[in-house]
Length: 346
Ligand code: SAM
Ligand code: FES
Image: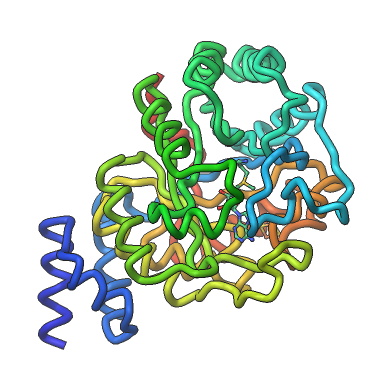
């Protein structure tokens, strides 16, 4: 007990640990109680009990990539593909605004149908109608010029999980044509342009080791992102990883707490994947240091089609239902949803 106290104190004070100490903390559940309590204390010192909401609009499930873990990968012929029009996206924003959302997250597969001009047109339209909102994009890997164009059109945040910072592990999760170097370059380009940047990774993805997780934490220290999104890997029946076990709830919570202590100011979501692996996963995530929830704002007609993994939650609910549901869940966990956008850089 004394030893764990020391480690957690040192992590809190220095926002860092040696690789050996991190390994001990990651591989044992002995310190979980202390760790979660400390992460919650740090989060409350900085953010009080506030939880930010981001309205997620999943605007296309077409993807030119073939990541081995992802249900909307190019080679999956078993899903019906869809694309939302600009008008449909704007109507999601309108509904979201009425429900109190001040951040819209446009997320999709890498879909060449949406050329840079089309993306800029959509972003400008949202920016024109909602000048005070934050616009977050999560469209995958693009050139620096494209990222700059979206930024100039009014986007201010970008989510791009690095997925794994270990090059050999990256190779096992992705086909030959993708590379960790490009992924990292994108993240640094985004930062240079002035976006608030979100990185992150799946916990328990196939072939992941504790050393991979330590590399993830080291990479995040190098990048210093504003947002860090992590969630358990969950298998999808139509992917090459269909027979791999799901990631662990406990390890995901442990990592959320470690991230809160390493990056006290970061925006850390309690993700949909966390809510899928356990009915109260998002509440547990909040208690372990997370401070963002991202309810779905996509039209119900397409929700089931954005199937990254099996049994994804919130695919039958209307946006208003998700909003009320999450309000209650956040309250039950001991926190409250706030609707301001947070520290957006413009
Ligand atoms: N195309 C964009 C990109 O690559 O960043 C955004 C969409 S991508 C589907 C969003 C995230 O879903 C990925 O970064 C990945 O971490 C997560 N994801 C995909 N398949 C998953 C799975 N089977 N289990 C858990 N998370 C998954
Ligand atoms: Fe969608 Fe609970 S958040 S139903």
